[in-house]
Length: 505
Image (cartoon, rainbow, N blue to C red):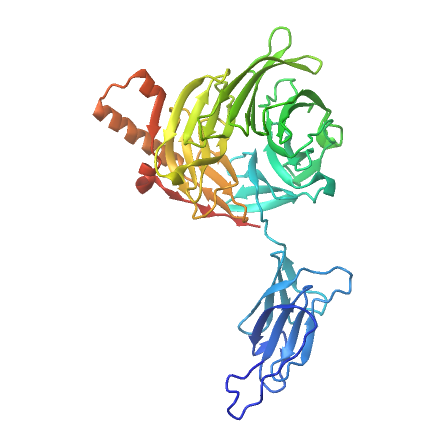
């Protein structure tokens, strides 16, 4: 400690070895009932191991030590200190981003109260349930799955899983079904896929189910549930794809009440191997009705790292037997790649996105039905992810860099409606459509942003374009109608929306 007037009849600087690494420093006239005997104030020092020393400002003598480790657990390092102006309490910020408040009634080992660390490293967000204005969403970090309730412009953490066994590795993929109860699937770097049952009423919780009967040899890159009809007796289908160039289709029987502790009875229907490269995206399209013989025709679309879209027609027979009937392949344009694909259950088709700013509708056999190219600068490059709303009327896709995302009207010819910006420098890691007028996005730094009241703007945009087309009265060829170019950048002056960061508790 050095007096700024040293050299003018003042004592030289004082030095003291504290014996451990110090990361934070704060000064106050008084702090938590401790005062300097000479009125020089007190000094709070934050150390490694969560320890805070309160020193006399006149001679650096120890007045109190808070945050003892006598219980055998070492708290995270103190990296920040902030004192109240009246000196009755102070806050400590720890390396795990948790906060602790120390007051006059705090003992040397027990703080007043602590706030748990905020969720960081968010990798994806999925819709679990839509119940009016109380939507439930699931997010994943490197090692945990979180269940949130969205209500009154805030996110409330309802349940969180513990870190899995070290053999599982980090969470690399997330998917949620539309079944009741909702099943959440999380893929891991080790190739294992875990199933969780989400209890949404009374006391929300995440209950882990039995392991799947098979696992991949490499990192799981994507997961997709088939659309489930609660009035049918068909099982829930899950598809997983991996870096080991394989895809697996599982059948999950929900009729036995899995929340009562019984087995989920998951079986492996099909194991598709030897793709040309790692499989990065997947979508599973269910048949609207069963055939007379009880068999079911499924469409499985996968996107590989070498720019191929592989679409297979599968036949699912009674007794848990599945086979491939036919297969088709489609190559992405040169210099581009597939960044997202979703199944449109209402019209039995696929919606796909390419990095060269193209949004496409593909039929069940992979043939192009409609295409829209987003025009603008290089900042509007599509990076994904691509998500559809529950009624498949809207889609949202992520853009590169700080461009945000684009909301697309699927029912009106894949028309871009509005570009959503959030002020983030990096692209979003997860996107979700809560209902017709709310979009939720998450970033790896732990930021969650919501855009709302978009439905009215979408109608206004559609009306304006309809009036412009009627005024122009220029006939278009069938080829132009099939491949229309739209520019979300041109909509920015009128319809750009800044997102609002959600308060998480």
